[in-house]
Length: 80
Image (cartoon, rainbow, N blue to C red):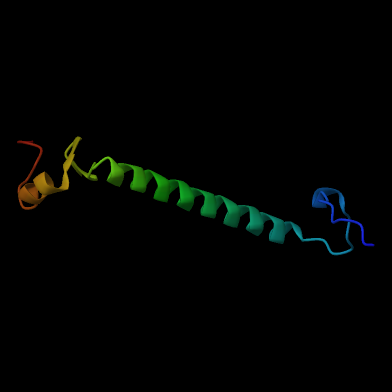
């Protein structure tokens, strides 16, 4: 009779193969990029669910994109 499989914590298993410092840095960077992309997609999906449209910077303020189209060819900022 076989013994049942057990969960093994792989952090404590030592192997002869090790990653170089550059490979570890690259793996960490890829993890951060994937994490940031996932967070960004979650925020965009949340805004879409709440029916909040992205805003565009006009001068020192932000306006909805439908309003920004009206200012596409207008010099905003007043006289200088």
